[in-house]
Length: 193
Length: 193
Image: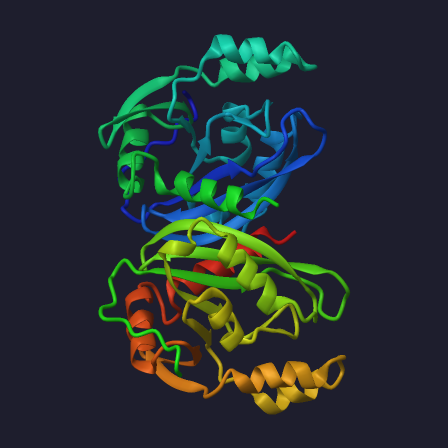
């Protein structure tokens, strides 16, 4: 908690990066496109960025950090929102490391409570079980939050729960999912071949 | 003009598809990604679709029509907005044919007045000059319109100038460029490798 970013005020036009992955065939070797969308609050898109990661690979944290740090939007960004912490199958993001590497608070958000038992079970079919499991545990506490009347689940690095909830409220203009994540999902799945 | 769609009313949440192309190396053989964004008026994204076309090819009209007609969003759409009529170099869209093939009004919009002399000049370096030039001429009159204080240029198929101007006004919430085109450009260029 030592490097937790304290927001004096959450502006309605706060720049938030939402990240999601494209479509892919599970357990097949290959790369998946990752899309990042720069949202201005809950209303307008300022930019789009992309990278790729390996299906069931170990490079998500590093690739996300490089994409963010290389972006011309980096200096405007105040928060990174992830659609959960597993991408392209079981390529797990270490949200504490991503927070440290980008110097930006990170929030992983899901609409269903992560089932750690089922995740561990699935991991046992992959190499590097312990490395992946460690990242999952290090994401820390899973907070249950009510957003626009719906339960959502968030894990945080570098931001307080109270600030995170304020940013979720500002960016959830269309549904119980914040716009940066709703639109990142539409783009990533829409452009997948 | 016989198949011109008459809008009784332009809803503020009218579904408009904005289309733009991704980045590519001019005059090199290959395909370019084309992104279509379904906008709800000038505010919210309902979906994203994609296809590819050949650099300096002749398949834009056909590929755009297939992408649109195959989309689950087709029935909600009321207008197709193109970022000009040339994509991926000189792959020219026949907007009358696109209008007929999709049964949707088509508007091609640019921020600079198309320089037909320069376009013809460039065409002379390519095969199928006459076929391309015919599509350019068949796009019809280039209308100069003032939008949010800035001149823009539009060519129309299947819609009146007055209805077209109303839809431009409804969708231009952030700049002089309608949101479907502004965001299609951000996505298409942002996701290009």
